[in-house]
Each structure stands twice: as structure tokens, then as C-alpha cells.
Amino acid sequence: MSKIDIVLIKPGSQKQLYGELSDFKLTAIEPPLWAAIWAGYLKHLGFSVVLYDAEAENWDYDQTAKKAIELDPLLAAIVVSGSNPSASTMNMTGAGEIAALIHDQAPVIKTLLCGLHPSALPEQTISEENIDFVCQGEGFYTLPLLIDALKSGADDFQIDGLWFKNDHRIVSNPRPPLMKNLDEVPMPAWDLLPMEKYRAHNWHCFDHIKERGPYGILYTSLGCPFDCSFCCINALFGKHMIRYRSLDKVMAELDFLVNTYGIKNIKIIDEMFALNEKRIVAFCDMIIERKYDLNMWAYARVNTVTEKMLSKMKQAGINWVAYGFESGSQRVISDVTKGYKMAQVEKVVDMTYRQGMHICANFIFGLPEDDFDSMNETLKLMLDINAEWANIYCAMAYPGSKLYEMALENEWPLPESWAGYSQYAYETLPLPTRYLTGGQVLSFRDYAFQACYNNPRYLNMLDKKFGSETVSHIQKMAKNKLKRKYAKYR
Image 1 (cartoon, rainbow, N blue to C red):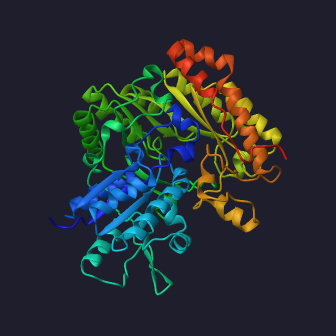
Image 2 (image 1 turned 135 degrees about the vertical axis):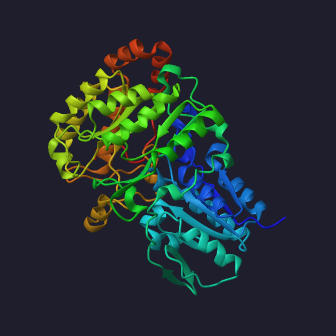
Image 3 (image 1 turned 180 degrees about the vertical axis):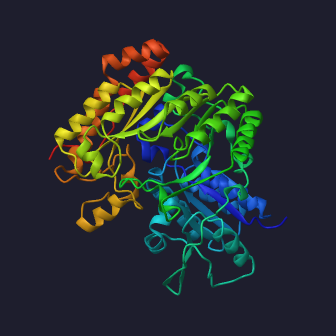
């Protein structure tokens, strides 16, 4: 039997990153998109590939390393990713631990870290972690050439996008160009993943809360053309832009997921889905023609969504729209270059509800201009909208974002560990604002969470729309008070 060329690993750190919520099964377990994309691409080029999702398999770090070592691959690549861009950095703890275990126990196996966080901080990653390589960027150029070089026995790797050490000296290579035509990238290797083990977010399935699987994700584009200061998504690509797959390719993948795995619950993972009305309408018409009974959700932006978009999205089975409202203060919104006026929020909310859709509302406490007054404005907006679900975040200086650069420049305190970038971990440490400490922000966020999910108006709305079982689920969820190291007024 010939040697496996590469094993791609999605690390699992549910308990560390989500605290008590991991036991409650509140969070989704999503297929690892980038690991699956790379696996499909490398398979298409003729390489032998194994893909492990340690999170879905519930393997600890030792088990994951052991599984990789048993394969004896040429290269073990740990993919530092998550269900959204902000989830990459917090997964560095597990990624680094698994890579170090493989490196120490089987040094003949070369190790590599790839994904958003390593792309944002390649020099720091190769310096601090016990690994052989870092891949900076989306990897379509870098990974195949690295495998070929390892097969040839090379010990010098002048490959664009690759960072490595040579006699304790860090060697960097420039980023390769981005893949111009995403249709050249084959379908992600869903066949290499335990598709029966994935589950949707609880809110995504409020009308069938006990049926969160089977679950799939779908991407129609990569990147985002906007430049919000708190976002790090484009660190993987190196520029602010969006690239589209052809709708024929997207539909072929959707057909595969539905017909092969019986998937009904789907997340459209594009960071900027609702942007081009003509494209959205055409995409939705293709789904409507198939008469699929789907329950999907997608991201939208307050100042790009249109009524025609929403109407077609609903007809196609996109029942949930996730909006980044972020703050109830125009001063705070303008400071982070979000680019919309507060007056647009009410209009968009009304427009969405008129289509019979549900809203996942995203809010961030602790953006640089936040003080107690502005955070109370955000809380008021949250309660006024009374969305079916609210993601209630603290501002974090994620590597690859402008906030991270600002934090370094101003010497603002950052989390002591990568796990501290998780929104729900014990070590969570938000960014301080110009007026508040990170501990004050975290305390307010946790207070806002309880105010939202224990609100009688909210619970009554849920009961009318989804029934008593969903209300009981939310009440049980709200009883889980997160343990916080830094949550205190000071």
C-alpha cells in the first residue's frame, strides 16, 4: 500500500471553547469547509488524502494525534478554522497541541498549520508552534507543491505561501495569487467526513428543535468587499474582494448534499451572501424549480438587502436571515466603518418580517467607541427588535482585523491564550474600549444575554411562533451561567 500523501485535521475543542454550553448541545457542529475544500482539491489532483474531523468525532488531542500517526502520512495539516471567521484563532490551542504531539511522537511526519489565523500571523505561528510549516493563504498553489517537494526529498522549500524554519532561521515566501476561477476548485470532499454527525444551530431549527440533522453547509462565494474594522475574514485572502462560484456549480453541490445525504438544514456560509440582487434571484429560482423542502439561513447586510431578494430567498427555503446590526449607537457604528444609518435597521427588520422570515440578529458590545450609554442603546435595540435569535458578542481583536492592529499599536490588553478569544470560554477577555475595561464589557454582555433570553416578551413571541418545546429549550439554555475569569466591574 502506498504512503498517504496528506491527512487534513479539523481539531476539536468544544469543552474548552464553549464551557458549559458544550454539554447543553447549544452549538452547531458544522462540516469543516476549508478542510473539505482542500481535500477535494488535492484528491482531484491525484494525491491520496484522509480527512479527520476531531470535533465531530469527539476526539481529544491525544486521540487525534494518535489517529494521524497511525496513518503515517507524508504531511499532517491541521486546519485552523471554525464555523465563522472569528472561530479560527480560538481553535489555535487545539491545533497547536495536536501538531506538537505529532511532531514529538513521529518527527518523520511533517506538520503544517493552515487556515485563517496562521495566514494572519504566519511568522508568529511558525515561531511559537512546534511545527514544520505554515501555509499562508488559501493553499491551492502551496499545498500541492509542498507535497511534491516532500515526495522528492527536498529540504529547501521555495514555494509561494509557505513559511518554514531552516537552521533556526525563519524563511518566508510571498503569497501566491488567488484562484481566479473558483469553478476550477472541485466540490469539497464531503464523502471523507462523518456527515451523519453534523447538527445545525439550535435556533436554525426552532420549529423542529429535535431534528437538527442531517446538516450541511454551502458556499457560493469567498471573501467580502467591505472593510469593517472588527472583521478578520479577508486575512485568508490578503485583500478585500469577493469571488463567486458559477451558479451551476453551486447547484450541483446542493443537489449532491440533498440527494446523497438527505440534507434539509443548510447554512449558506458566504460572509456576504445578500449582495447582488440579480444573482440571488437567479440562484433562488433554480432552487424553487427543484421543489426542495429546505430550511436554510444566510448572512445579509442592512444596506445591501432588498425586498425582492428577501421574497425570493423565502420562496427558496431560506427561512432565516442573519444581520450584523452590531450596535444601537450611530457613533459606534460609524467608528467601525460599518457603513449604514441606524434608520435603515427598522426598515430592514419590517421588510424581513413581511416576507415571513426569521431574524438572527448579531450584536457586539465593546467596540472602540462604546461606553455604558451606547451599550444600553444596543441593548434597547436588541429588545426592541425582539428577533427570534440574537448572537450577543463582545468585541475581540481577532488577528487579521484592524482592531488587532489597533490593539497592538495602543498596547491594549489581549487574551493571555488563544482560547481567550472564544466568546464563551472561562478565559474570555474582550477588547477594552476607549472608556471601559474588557471586564466591564464582558459583564455587560453577560447581563444583556440574560436580559434578552429571560424577557417575557421574547418568550411569548417564541411560544406563538414555535411552541412550548422551543420555549423550554431556551429557558434551559438561559440557566447556564458561564463562568468567567474577567467578568467583573472594575
